[in-house]
Image (cartoon, rainbow, N blue to C red; front, side, top):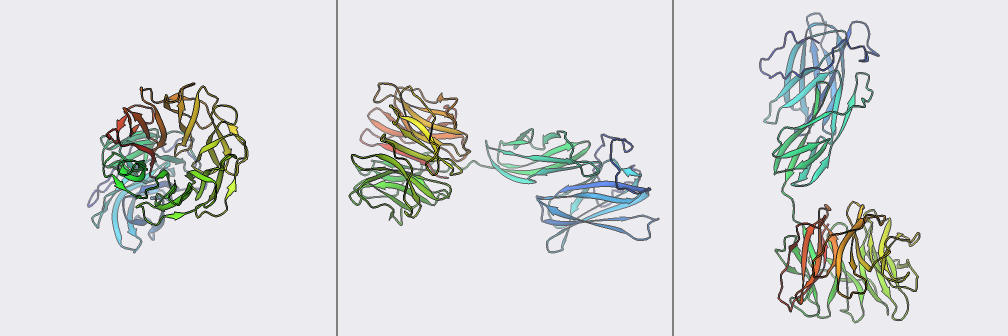
Length: 490
């Protein structure tokens, strides 16, 4: 397609240089009749209210206009346009919202040759105050998915690209990725990293055809952390704070003490154990501390609740002189089922993100090590084998890592935070200070780990990056106060 009569008029025309000649024998013209030309249309409209595009082609030698309708799917409109070859083909593109109101318009007059034509870009000017839309007619179609996404500062989102040739066949080539605003977002092979709050267009281009995604970068949310503290009661109550240590709110006030909180998958409720009714039992409550409900009621001690993504609660049951095993029940306390029955001490259960497996600590083979089993108790596999005692395992949100505490051999107080792959490989120490560290938990995005540290006759909550760097204290209490059991809100 020669750009011989491009009309600017009321619209801006953006011409994208083609990388292949229209006569390239490798370009498919299957399905085209003699004298027909083909243009492959694509436009990213994710940042607009556009629901449908209408392409109209007129020319002096055409008895009637040719009309093509292109629907919007996942923020992108694309498809082939086949028209008779010839000169002075006026292409008008109109965009409409889902109410039928025209929102954008653009046009160009070009010459069309037989077969697949080179690339042409048309800017669709907004008629209703929206952002412009770049429509591309080319030898290939390029689609970026998703066409719009939101990412927090410092976090990433992966974009995928599909490239099709004129016959609609996938092209196994990589596009060139670029960002229009590198101060807002960077991109590497489609992986976008948020830099500063704002909006950036990420572009993938191939053979002169480009497609884009609109990335909105927002401030990273701090999130919240539930924890146990002795600050108001020596028995210990549950509290909630922002992930920077501010905004501490007391959730429970029972004089018997509340322990080991764990969040429901939607972050609306907390499970915990308490002696408030005399015996250690599992309870749940709303995230603001209201609506406390007792789930277990028996002569055994039920502790260590862990809430799964499919709304089940695993816990430890100690039968006082009998086994200490892992059980599971519904989030309403129904269907209590025993999962382990080893004479050893099984404790600290935690669910994999997909609720298919449970990691736990056990001394069934001598010292405490970490094990994993299916959600029904089958397939128990040992993950660690010393040296020292391993306990407090916590799965990362993506299921690839497990953080845990390890106590040095022969020590009663020398504990450190470690991380390993979910299969037990790649064990790495994250903390190495003189004070012992316990009970790690991952931030929802997997970038940070919260834990508590016993230091200087007191216990405080700390946070660090997932690689062990950047350790920061979130609480700093006097020696009479201790903070423990931190767990990050989903």
